[in-house]
Image (tube, each protein chain N blue to C red):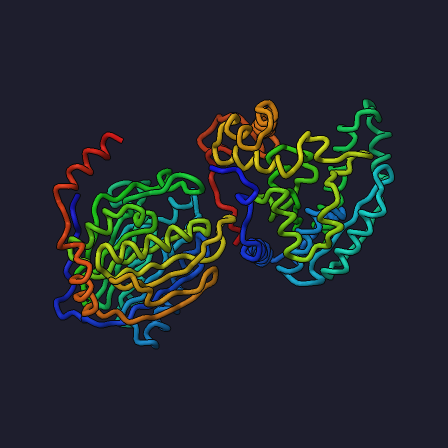
Length: 288
Length: 280
């Protein structure tokens, strides 16, 4: 497995403000969703935020089923170009989700997160764990990604994961080992899974001694109700910001990377890592 | 997994709000002018009518009462009136007996002794009335099927189950009772024995051969992939009864599916034509 580490700029902020943009989407209507993104980027600007995070597949909505093939675009592509225009103008970083069309085929689609900054497109992450059980049918539509992604930005090293990835600690761990100071998890989680995500978001922050921003969708798509509850968690597991349940919300919160140091000494999970166990884990997982 | 009655406990305020959001969201997307409910005076239709009123406001929900001579029950009509009053529904009562008789008299093979076939005419006739009103008044039809009767196939295909939305279809009957209490449905409606009222003296539990308190736990066990012997053992009932419920559940899937066809072409309705139901 490889890491995509992309460097944006060296002059990095240790302290900055994040906005969690917990929105509902208009399914299949990219124009309407971009308009909403633009509006909330302006709101974030007014509140002096440096980064706005939107949910998984927020460009299109989550339940679009067969329409995914006509909605998917390359990254970079037409929609990321529009978002770039917005972020350049607002001098803002934006993370959002969209179906990504492969540049090499006509119907290979990834469930991706895009990171765009004040100087344009920075990078993307392709969801690795695609739920295909219960009400989920992601493997039917998406090809999984094969690499974790950490981007070296003006806001520090940001690692991206998407929704179900959070159930697999190795994804966040790999991002952290590649240096991620902030792990961003964009999500489209329906209500019955709230307790899982609330436990896992905290756990991933603590075990990696990293900030973790979780931004979930709200609204109802094809009968599925998304519960929201977006949150920013500090490296000590403290919930620093919490959005409302079941309705659109927009919350901002400061991140100060200096807060990581005392936690790394207090609960030194990275120092205490035992790499040899990963070999055992690999073997055991292959023989499940 | 322990099959105690507590497994069916939910946070009823959360359930109420979830259903209200669902109804309101769909109603607003479709830009309909109201919601119509076939109001029988029973617990299920009373509950969905009340939830609809709570979701979109009094005066926008229309309760259509469709009694007929053979199964006429003054108490049911009184209960339907009570719900209409309590939740501020618009209402209309139509005696469908003449329509039913016209059907009976015009079907050459009609057999008055065949309760099931005759009863299904009643359920489907009510559906025709409800959809006429919905079309004419630009309203949505809100169905009132619960999970117990849906899983058991205990409904008339294209009859009482026909609706645009079915907000309590994921709640077992005993759960609907708790939700009904929570939203203020009167006790006399919640506690009276359930009946589809397709013929005189028809009661759901007698016909199904099991009390809802047991049936719901059997169905809950099946929903959670438990084996028949495990369910029977835990509930202290015969394995044969659990197997009977399971057989009925599996045999009635045709009633819960739309338009089964055979695959001939590239993408097929009901199979791999997979589109979302997200009305813009």
